[in-house]
Length: 147
Ligand SMILES: [Zn+2]
Image (cartoon, helix red, strand yellow):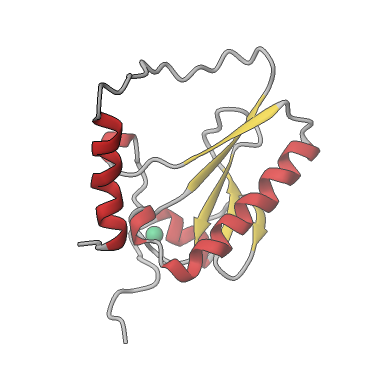
C-alpha cells in the first residue's frame, strides 16, 4: 500500500479535485477534472487536472494516462465547437525552467483565433552530421532500459 497521499492539503489543484476550492468545472471522469483557467490566454482556456497529486507528467501514474488524455480530447473538441475556434494549443509545462508554476501536473487547452497575435518565439536549431542519430540513440537506450 502506498504511503503517498492521493491529494495534498497545500495544493490548489488538489483543492479543486476535492471540491474545497471553487472552480468552473467543464468535465470530469474517473481520472481527471477539467476546469476553466482563472488567468486565461483567451476566454475558454481550460486545464485538465489528474485526480491525484503528481508533480509532473513523469509522476502521472500510467494507469491514469488514458483518462487524463481522454478528458483533454473531449474538452478540446467541445471547446472548438462551442467557441467556434480557428485552432487550439495543448501544452504542459514540466519543471520550473519550463514555466511550471503549479506543481500538480496539468494540461492547458488554449483557444486560438486567426490574427490573435499570440506567438511562440522560438529559434529552431539544425542537427549537425550524425547528431540526430546520437540524440535518437540516447533516448532509445532509456526507453528499453529506463533508470
Ligand atoms: Zn495536487
